[in-house]
Structure formats: C-alpha cells, structure tokens
Length: 489
Image (cartoon, rainbow, N blue to C red):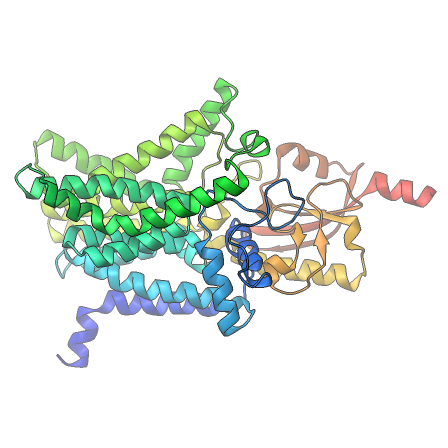
C-alpha cells in the first residue's frame, strides 16, 4: 500500500491524532481544573509528599486540605505521583499521560467501530465520537473520566471480540480511577453474560460462566481488598458531613423536579440533542417495522439502558449534581447504536448529511453557555480554556498589589492552596467563604444565586479589577462594609 492509499484509508484517525496533538500543545501548561483538583492533584500530592507510605488519605473531618473521597479508588493519584517521581513535578506530565491514553483510544476505538461500520462510514462515526465536546474537554484537562472512557471502550471491545486478557486490563483501569467505573463494570458483566448466552443458543453452562467471570476476578479481588481495608480503618464512606450534602436524600418535590431537569439538561447539552433526536427516530422506525437486533446490538442497548437507569435512580436517592462527563459512556453507546442502525436503513448520501449535522452541533456545542444563575458543566466544554490565563492574570495582579492572601476568598477552582492547581506558589491559600475583605468571583465557579445577588450590590461589594476573555470572566471584589470598618479602626 502506497502513502496516498494509506492516508485515504486512514484519514479520520490521522486527523484525530493531529487534533488531539494540537490540543495537547495548547493545554500542556494548564493547571488542574474542576473536580480534577481533588481526584488527581490533591490525591497525587498525598502519595508524592508521603512517599507512598500510606494508601489511605486523611478523613473528611481531619482538618487537612488533602482528604479522601474513599469510594473512589486512588489509582489516579497513585499513577500521577509515580509519573511525578519519574518525569518531574510538572503540569505537562499529566497532560502527556492524557495524550498517551488518547493514542490508545484512537487505536481501540477504530478497531471497535470497524466491527460495526464499513470503510465508507467508519471514519465519520470515529470523528463524531472523538470530537464530542465533553470527551475533548475531559482529555484537555487530563481528567480521570477520560481514562474511564478509554477503559470502557477497551472493555466493551474485549467482550464483543472475546479477548479475556484485554478485558481484564480494561476493567482494572475502569474500576481503579472512579466509582462510576465500578458501576459500569458491573453492568458490563451482566451484558457479557447475556452476550455469551445469546451466542450459545440461549444456554449457559458452568464452564461458560467460569470463562465469563475469570477476567473480572482480578479487579474484584483488588477492589474488595481496598474497600475492606478502607472501611476497617476509616469507617463508612458517607459520614454525617457527606450525607448532609450530595448524598443526602431529596428533601422536597421541587428539589426532585430540579434534579430531574438537570439530568435531562446534562444528557442533551453541548450538541448531544441532535444524536438523541436521531436515536428516537431510529427507534421509532425499528419498532414500527419490527426490525430485529443482532446480539452485538443488544449488548450496546443493554449497557445504554442500564447506565441511564442507574443515574435516573440517583435523582430520587441523592442530591448529587450531575455533570456531562457522567454520561460519556452511555452517550457513546447511543451514538454507535443509533448511527449503526441508521446506515443499515438509509442510503449513504442521507447518512453523510446526518453525520455532518451532528458534527456541526458538536462543534457549536462547545459554546452552549447559559445565564450565570444556571449551573454549567465547564469541564464539558472547551469554552473554559481562557480561564487558565485569566486566573493567572488575576493572581499576578494580586501579587503585584501585595494583597494579603488571608484577606482573600474565592469560588470553586480558585479557593485553596494554589499549589494544588499550579504545582507552584505553595502556601498562597485562598479562602472558600465570602467573609473576607476580597472575593475572587468567576462564572466558572457556579456560585449560589444568593452570592451573585450580593456581589451585584454596590453598597456591599466594589469591583476592583475585572478580567474577561470569551465566555469566561474573573472579577476581584472588595467588601465595602469591611473596608469601611478597617478605615474606622
């Protein structure tokens, strides 16, 4: 095969390698962002600074800024700390690690999609999956959820192609970086059993069951050991502080309605709505024509339904805020299943028009920015990229003005010790409550409506310095009442 033929047959993977490589160059010096500050940076600092002497981080009520989430296995922190020891305590290390996983994803996804799609359509679907805004953003911020997605694709491909060793590897990373991966692995186990059941004329023998279970055994043993060790030393994950927050039961019907609305919004936002619309059309068409699903189709559908049902249940038993990244695996399943059935029934010209429409919605999905009183999943859109420079500019201004950090507080992604975000400026700690002389506001922080109203009150807060680029803004406010009190003193 000559170079021209190779490029033609692999144009989509080549373009995705270039796109992900470019995004790595743009992001490689960006600090940790969103929940990544806790799940990667803080947990990695624990292992890095303590030289891996303890698997367990301090408890929630310990007073330490580094605390355990507990229910999330600590693999991400361990891997990051190991990489810091090898390559240096640098921001680019996490982004290079994310690029490593992106290369794995590109290879595994191409193999997986080639099972369903022919040469004329596989490149389109490949690009649609990899250019989805939340996937791109999770990659750009070097998030554990990007690794979770890669591991999910590996595991699903291993089930369909009966690769037990690869499945065991995929499950290790799927379960090791996040509790949601543990849920996904359990659902994969169910669908794996059902897939073998269908392929064996709806029969399961003791031998076939044992073959199904073997790849899951290593991670089951590791997880059991970790959770037993954790609970025996720290107690149950959800203490009084935790259960009074995200994991508390809903307290009102209005709260349930809002939570349901958030579930719906996160499911369809950032351009996803067009895939759902096409999916409903395809489902209606197939039901009306009594079309049958192949075993591989059924596996995708079972995983899609069970994952969505799982998070739907969370609406009624928790107050956990949903993020777009929670829905990456199920949206991937919806995309593949929908487009596979679409190309099976439509001519190529029509399907290409749908592909182009989806890609347009995905690209514009990065700019779905809501009013400030509607919480946004900033870790699901590349529109957040300007935040890092604005944050740097704001702190440079604070340092230049020689403001006392004891007088400064800020919102999410701003408060705390700067070293956990920047891997520098240790000891420059911003408070997390607006009860100090200065407050750093950003729309990234999704602050409560009451605080937004307070900051707009010029009798109480004065804007000192504003930084804005694109959809992101940061503003340093001074507390007018506290300023007056200090002057009197």
